[in-house]
Length: 87
Image (cartoon, rainbow, N blue to C red; front, side, top):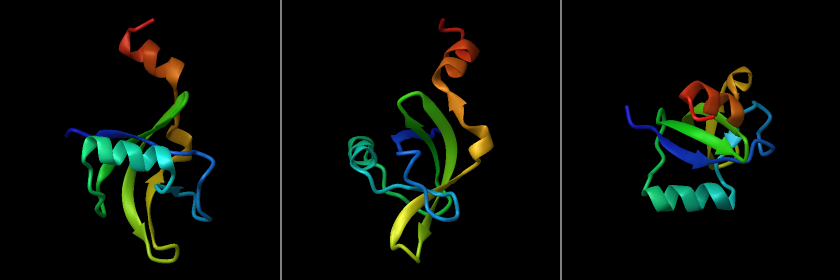
């Protein structure tokens, strides 16, 4: 599975803990990668030094796309580099 890596603001979560996919960096990444969001789509969401896997869904309450993530599974960039062997 080829998951796209898309910027997300980890401080922009809704009341259910889902990341809102409406910030400028997210929109720019989606456009650059030519990604059209759809329910159930898997994405890798990143911010400066954080990364997490997410599943896209549409928030009817807010009329925007969001990503369901596990806050316990957020990876730090240095953890990712060590796991990949890129010191």
